Amino acid sequence: MKGKTVVITGASSGIGKALAYEFAARGSKVVMGARNVDQLKEIAEDIRQQGGEVAFAQTNVTVEDECKNLIDLAVKNFGQVDVLINNAGISMRALFNDADVSVIKRLMDVNFWGTVYCTKSALPHLLKNKGSVVAVSSIAGIKGLPGRTGYSASKFAIHGFMESLRIENLKTGLHVLMAYPGFTSSNIRNAALVADGKEQGNSPLDEGKIMSAEEVAKHIYKAVKNKKTSLVLTTQGKLTVFLSKFFSSVLDKIVFNHMAKEPDSPFK
Image (cartoon, rainbow, N blue to C red; front, top):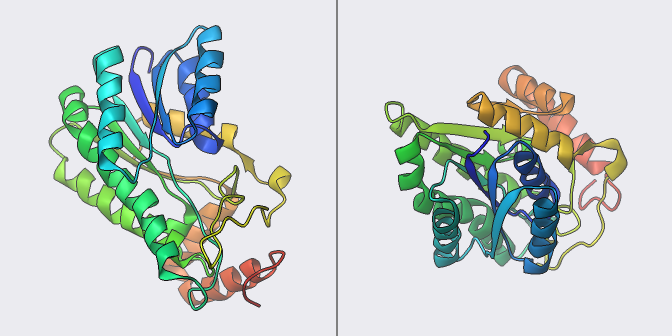
């Protein structure tokens, strides 16, 4: 991946930030997009001090023009786009019965449409270089999670979009990767939306006991390098995939009971 230009959305924190450091350390030219431009600037300065090449732009992935501007920045600074990692995303935590529909729409705008907008702008460059397009999904994109209806819906939509894109490009050389991390230590749960659209503020999980964003980034880097089409992380995630194929009804009960044990769970 040395010398490759890698565009990463949601790069100001969590998995996106870890991906920026991982690819930069491996010699890639990194282009970061996120809404928090101050955080992007700090990360970029740190990467440059370590000898990396980096550019960044404030990017709200729900705005198609801002997605295009991010891709244009990559081409302007480094002449090409070899990898696009669609990582920007938000979550939710509320029963569908209680949640305002605007919460579901917001998740679809960020998670699904953000992926579509960025991929649309990057695709001509990726096809030219036989590059890679990556979607950082979730186990919630394989198995619907209670209390996360909008999140699971957006991740299932991304799965369908990316799978179709892969099949359309079987003869073009485009590499399409779906990455399915399990629970990962990041800011996504703190920023998860509750029923009225406000951020919940505190994570219901013990962040120290789940996979770190840095470890996830290393796995994704290797999967891109080796042109894998699917990456399922954590033992829990792999077990979920297995059970969803052969013991779906049993898995429903397991998932319900697991999620109901969360502190302040919206359901019991």
